[in-house]
Image 1 (cartoon, one colour):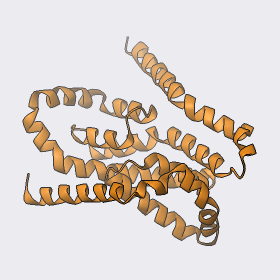
Image 2 (image 1 turned 135 degrees about the vertical axis):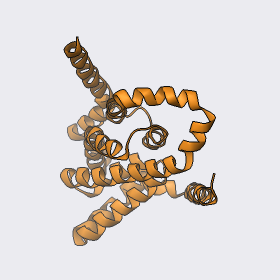
Image 3 (image 1 turned 90 degrees about the vertical axis):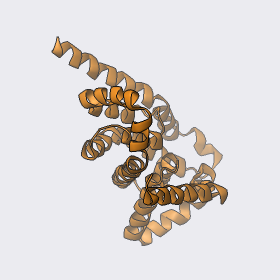
Amino acid sequence: MKPIQIALLVAVILVIVCFFAFGLTEYFSLSYLQEQRLRLVDFYRDNPAITILVFILLYVALTGLSIPSATGLTLLAGAIFDLVVGVLVVSVASVCGASIAFVIARYLFREPVRKKFPQQLATINKGIEKDGAFYLFAIRLVPVIPFFVTNVAMSLTTIKLWTFFWVSSIGMLAGTTVFVNAGSQLGQLESFSGILSPTLVGSLVLLGVFPLLAKWSLNFVRNRLSTRKK
């Protein structure tokens, strides 16, 4: 690694270590979200532009540094904003943060990994060159692999940044909508009686079955494409 790469890697590691060492993960927990929801909503009502800007910058910074916080931030967006604004804000922030993480990881790790595992990476890149966009879309649509892991893993391949950007934008849209909606319902709880409200139960059910529905949709598209090729 070049000195500038080492310096960047050390800086990223220090930020991540400090994030966990100072217990900043608590600010993205459901309990904290519940405690601060009314304050955040009031602040957003009085300062909508500032709130949206700060939220986007925070989301981009954390996800860009590959700090695992996307789920909590997306739920938080649902608690603060309405569904439409929340989805738009998270969509912009998440794809920008993912792209930054992609660029950083590619700059730091792709060459060292390519030199150490040339044959393995060459095999993977052949598949990426052929169906890379579809693979990435599948990963984004069925969020089994953590958000930050996908960003780093794809950076090691030959997929282009623009392809990574637009495929991620489309692939994450459905999941973003589900999580923002769930966050809006969780944020509206004011008493234990609200836990069993039909709206909240529906949101949680949707959140649980979304990966299965996405996987079914993906298999359906794949089968249709295979049939057309034959």
